[in-house]
Image: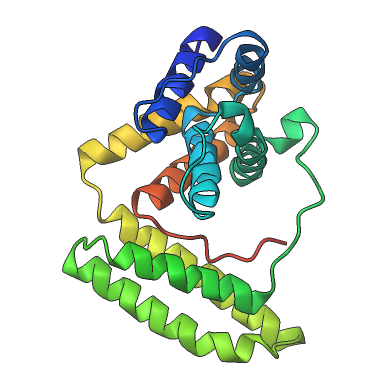
Amino acid sequence: MDPAEYCRAVEAYLCRKNEGHLIRIVGPVFEKVAGWAEQGVPLAVAFKGIDVYCVRYYSKGPRRRPVRVEFCEADVLELFDGWRRSVGVSALDGGGTNDRTHESLPAHIDRAIARLTAARARGRSPGFDARLDEVVRELDRHKVSAKHARGEARTALIDRLSALDRELLEAARNEVDERQRQELRAQADAEIAPFASRMPPDAKTTALDAAFERLLRDFAALPSLRVEP
């Protein structure tokens, strides 16, 4: 996307988040946001970074001033770093950051339960909702043992979380029709486009599949149950 068009899209999105209050992206801020476009930050990732900042900002009480895009930069770039790792393009740009803080296994499961409960409230098909209920109940059982899991027991639990994650993604695939599937594929292709010319064919296919899965996960409001290494 042309950097100017990218900036207009971010400006319009931020305007909506500020309930119609328009803050122009000009001057040094324009250069900053245009830099996101040049790095290949997908618009969906930029929007999600703005959302993350706004949720944190609003949680502190009534707003005192409109949110400015530069306030959201750290969240946008952190999400972009995670996006690059998830679709396998980090190596093309020297890798992502290596200073991630790993949350504990019980905290990871707690967060997953909270997000799955929120996803359940959206009310999709009865079969999908029932599957979410089953996974929440299983995670609730694992939460207690996760506190003391060590060695083989911890490895087995992590493997089970990965298996549940794959099962939920497969259930989410069955929730989308062909039109929605094509739209998600098109979005995945657009996200990968800035990096595609530097990718071998196999790596590009893998990245497209990973981008599609990330978009599918967002569509169904599913957390990742996998534990990052």
